Image 1 (cartoon, rainbow, N blue to C red):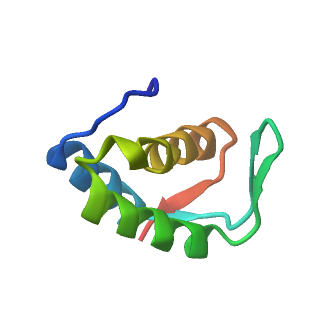
Image 2: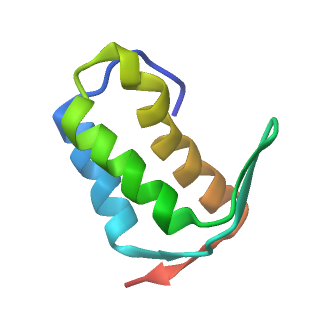
Amino acid sequence: MDYKPTFTKEEIEDIIQWFSTHKLEQDIDLGNGVHIRELDTALKQLVHIARTRYDNRVFSGQIYMLFKIKDELIKQGKVLGEK
């Protein structure tokens, strides 16, 4: 998904649902100096922001990270299966 300044509640619920139904490796490199070692911890915080601030443009970058992480997990083969 390309970056966008706002997200709908449906988009947020879809991405949260995806993360809650898949087993993931806990280490991912997103490029450009962004490396996450404890993915579950990062996702917990990003999901909280997405649920509470999805309609606020100030948080669009943090929310976009959820979509970027999902895309990179799939691209790098780090989705281990469904829970």
